[in-house]
Image (cartoon, rainbow, N blue to C red; front, side):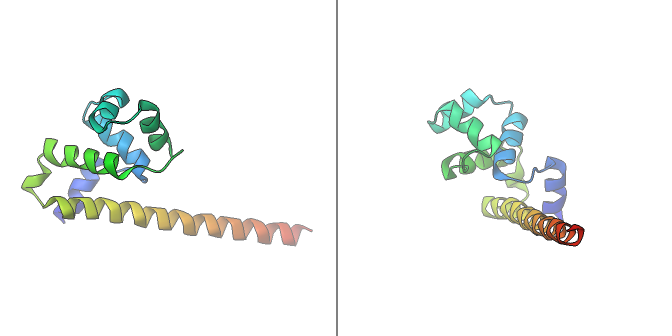
Amino acid sequence: MKTEIMLLNLFLPRTRGECIAHFRNMLQLTQIELSRQVGMDRSNISKMENGDITVSETVWTHILNRIYRDFDIEMELPFGDFRNTIELFIQKEYETRRREDKWNEQRLSWEQETSI
């Protein structure tokens, strides 16, 4: 129950890229500052946040560690549990969106077939 409450308090976005942007803003970091911390070009941070490229493991782990430490989540649960909970939440949301997308595609297909 504590984990769900903490996630609700974080207003967790639905993708890793959106989480990076959200957590970066919570930490009051610019893309430039984050890029320097992880040794990466700022444009790559932007592309990750926008979903143009896959979020690197380095950036993902770094930002989760910063949130975990800076917001004293370590007092509530181990880092592995924190990370797994966030990743399960994102994965569940991703799967739900995929099911909804498939349903919408199927519905459009049916509608097109019946209108012909």
